[in-house]
Image 1: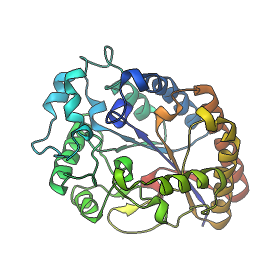
Image 2: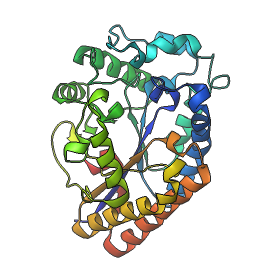
Image 3: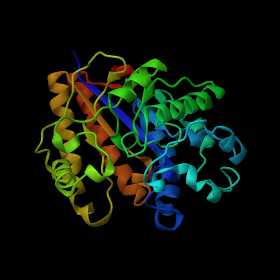
Image 4: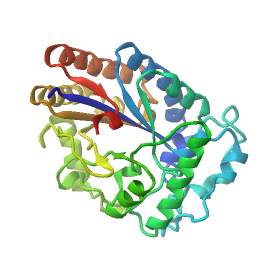
Amino acid sequence: MSGQFVISLDFELLWGVRDHADRRSYGANILGARTAIPQILDQFAANDVRATWAIVGFLFCENKEELLDCVPEVLPAYTNARFSNYGYFDEIGRDERTDPYYFAPSLIDQIAQTPGQEIGTHTLSHFYCLEDGATPEAFEADLKGALRLASRRGITLGSIVFPRNQFAAAHLDVCARLGISTYRGNPPGWAYHAAKGEEQTYPRRALRLVDAYSGVLGAHSFAPAGGSPANVPASRFLRPCAGRLARLHPLHIATIKLGMTAAARAGAGYHLWWHPHNFGRHVEANLAGLQQIIAHFRSLREAHGMTSLTMAGAA
C-alpha cells in the first residue's frame, strides 16, 4: 500500500481566538490569513495536493442578519463566559466587506472552486467540547446549525475537526448520528491527549514544542482505521515561521519531512495541519516553508507512490 499525505486546515478567522485575542491584538494575523489562503490554494492546485478545510460555520454567513438567524436553540453554557462566541455578536459588522474578521463567504467560494479540496466543519461557533459547562446536547445543536448553513450552499459536510482538538466518545456518537463520517483525532501519547484548556499544562505544551522541532516522540504516522466516524489522526501541526522560534523553523520543516518520508516508506499516513491565520504574519516565509513541504511530497510521490488525500479520502 502506498503512503498517504493528508492536509487539514482549521479555518476560523477571529472566531477561533476571540476568547483570548481581538482585532487590536491579533487582527494583522487574521487579515494576513486572507492574503495567504488564495496563495495556499494556488500551491495546492499547481501540485495536485488535496486538503480538507474545516470551516467554522459562522464564516459561511453573508451578513449579520444571516448570522443571527442561524443561532441554535441550545447554546453552550460554559462556566467561563469568554469561551462563548455568542457573547461577541455586538462587535460584529454588517458583512464580509465591512468586517473581514468574522465573515468569509468569498474565501469559501475560492476553496470550493479549487480542485481536490474538501470542505469540512470546525463546528458552527468554534464549540469547545470539553470545557466546563459544555454538553453533548449543546454540541449537537451547534453541529446541526453548521450542517444547515453548509446545506444552503449545496455543501455536504462529511469531516470534522474539533476546535482545540477537544472531543470525547459522546461527541463522536453525535457526529455519527448526524452523518459525519470522518474526524481528525490526536497523535498518540500523553502530551497530545484531548483535554480542556486548564489541563494543557506547561509540561504538556513544552513536550509538544520539543517534539515539533526534534521529532523526539516519533513520526506520528498512522494506519487507516475503520469506525463511525473514522479517525484520521493528526501527525504534526505546521508551526508558523514567526517570533523568537523563527530561526528554528528549518529544524521544524526537516522534522516534518522526516515524518513524511517514514510514512511513505512504510505505506502509512501522514497528516499535517495548521490554521490559515498561522501564516498571517511573515506570509512569504510561511508560504516558502509550505512550498518546501509540497516539493518533498512530490519527490515521495515519484519515489514511493505517496498519494495526496483529503480526510474523507484517507478514511
